[in-house]
Image 1 (spheres, rainbow, N blue to C red):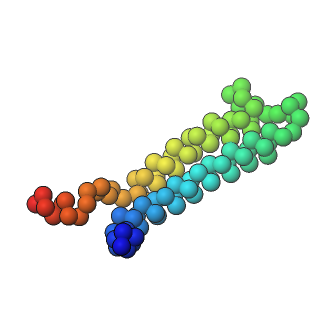
Image 2: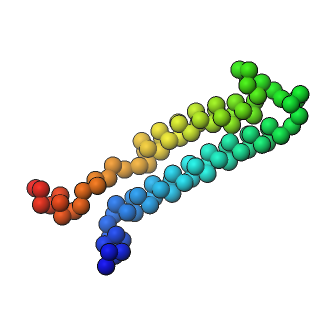
Image 3: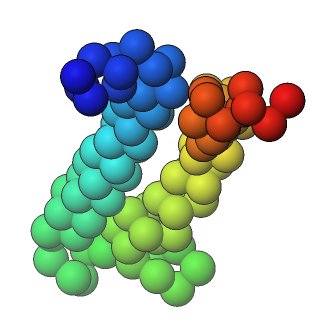
Length: 96
């Protein structure tokens, strides 16, 4: 019976959706980091390009990556996440 009450509670649907969005952000972050770190960083050191004194692969994978992720997380939280009450339905009804 416990499972059925969870299925009816709309908070679980919202939480599941937001969890999938979070997983998507993590996967995007890993692909971004891995692509630049091993894509650009696998060549000989003599051929590296530098940005602000850092190897380009490091700058794009770590510095630009964190800036992109912070912006994406702000956008996702502001526009896609919903404020959900943690109180039980019975508690909210009893306190009125």
